[in-house]
Image 1 (cartoon, rainbow, N blue to C red):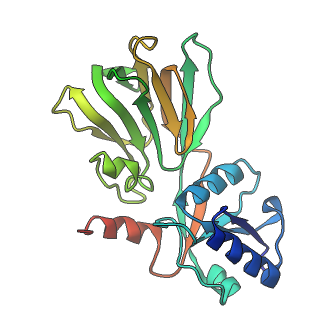
Image 2: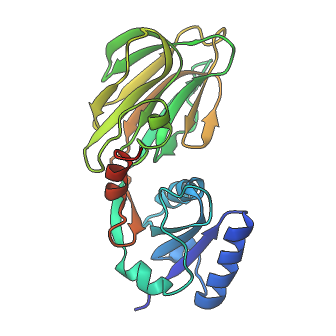
Image 3: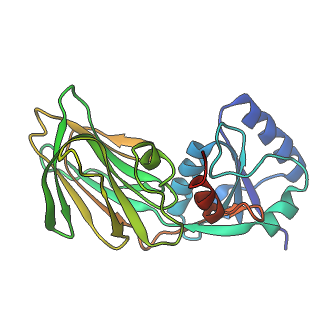
Length: 257
């Protein structure tokens, strides 16, 4: 039986042109009926499609082709032999983080999923002050910083790397906990934690020193508390051309100069 393909494209002209070409050639079905969603755009669109389809009873696999900028999560674009490429592509499993947050009145906000990272950031000209706990054990009574993030292995080469966090091998079952411009303790460079840990952040004096939390590209502002843990019941598959899998890309990133 032929693979059922759905197509998703960003608003960029190159992505829309590719979308029109491929749909005219291959047709397309709704995402909930697809075996594979072919994503045409950049990494941000891949993350959006991952989140959107991860809630489905039988989530489709994701095969991206780069019509954006860097395209770390995507394959090279070519309109030729698409079905053969998709059929022969190798899967890489990605497991997201679940982010739970509470507002200043203690009301829980809608939970969010993040396949790259969950990041807390100050929203005023004053540094954020955050108490940090792991599995309900206090590890830092006060971190004064611009922010702090938790990254998955798949996301460790993105914002986490820019914040000088470690690159994590795919399948390593660890998470990166990385400060963003720490002021105190100045020498704390973060931690690597087993993926089953629950990481909690309590914002100290959130009215005076407001903090926002983002899960990949979605943001909630003025939070008082955040809990982050791996969503063990949710996993997705990204498809890559042979020899270009996500694990290989993460390894290669460590030798990029």
